[in-house]
Length: 480
Ligand code: AMP
Ligand code: ZN
Image 1 (cartoon, rainbow, N blue to C red):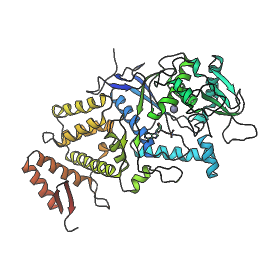
Image 2: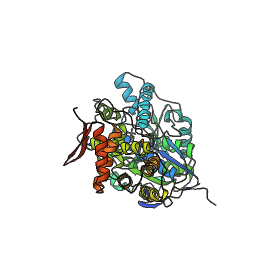
Image 3: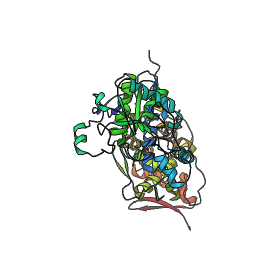
Image 4: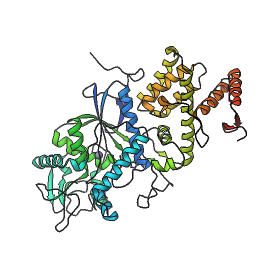
């Protein structure tokens, strides 16, 4: 007896699991419930567009899992303490350092950048998380977890803090395919003298004598603050249970942060595997586009808006590459994504305005192909290709197009389901006209010249002149 009613095309959802390193059927632990934990922002600086890629992709995942008929609990944390400037447990806490540099309090900085992140998520069409736990609000739980690890014999204490001894967890290197011997000989990350092995990691950092920190708490080992990795183990377990379905994060987290989360959690909870599917998205390559956080010239969602582009164009752009591929950022690509999005919204607005009843026999094959592309390890570029095929298909009525686009928008979240045909904005762009021009292009491509001429005449009657150029079709207001 199953209560799961997947959207047609999503019956066979497969996801790549970076732990087992293969695409496998998605089988939740306790259907219909599905728990997803995404590593959230370290709120000491703005979240740049690369960081936001690591928000948009799990949002797509969550929407697809929901469309597959499951009830998702989506948890993403706020790292407001414990994330050090170096992955090797060296250097200062990022929040503490930002506070010292700016003269603002760590709490104020955390609040400010948490707000920026939440606002930008919304502007990128991400659904609200169900739970957004903050590390600094979960100190007793983190201490409790470290105490269990200590009682189990997985830790040692040095002047600088409490460390996890990776030699006590034989599976440590398995998760990310690490070579632990290579780490000891290369001396690559050997910063803390007292560490027994470079891969050993901090569970609790002690405040040095004579130092007062903005964020520090008493613990059985002395005053200090938790290590970064323990927060995710603690909060994921607290809100999703001892085992859960999906954990996401950028690829950079696999070798250290997630490897350490697994070690702590599997020891404390005595489970294996702790998480059903590990999803690591590749990076947005910001390449030439400077992202120096200190100079304040970070590429953020605001930068897109200042350029006169729709923030959702970044979402569209993100879907143009598969999540396991690096994607290169460029303004040309963003402009192109913006144009494509405008056209798509235009199609939706025109289709909606036409009204009428859709014909399932015409729409369903497109729906099935769209969702099947996403069922295949979230192949968003292929899903977008199906969308364009549908809007250009002269065999679909406006009502069919509208029915398809509103359905697809459950995953895409591109505002298609809200598309209306407003009057032209001050820059002269107009989604309704974009849509009509695109319809005419589709008619021409299908050699349906009667329709294409009718659309040209209708636009001309409104004072819109269509310009066919070698690079595509644009329009302008005659006399303008
Ligand atoms: P942080 O605020 O540094 O903790 O990073 C938040 C998230 O952004 C993590 O999941 C990182 O893996 C991810 N991330 C950082 N840089 C990029 C990038 N250029 N592209 C995609 N994700 C990134
Ligand atoms: Zn994390």
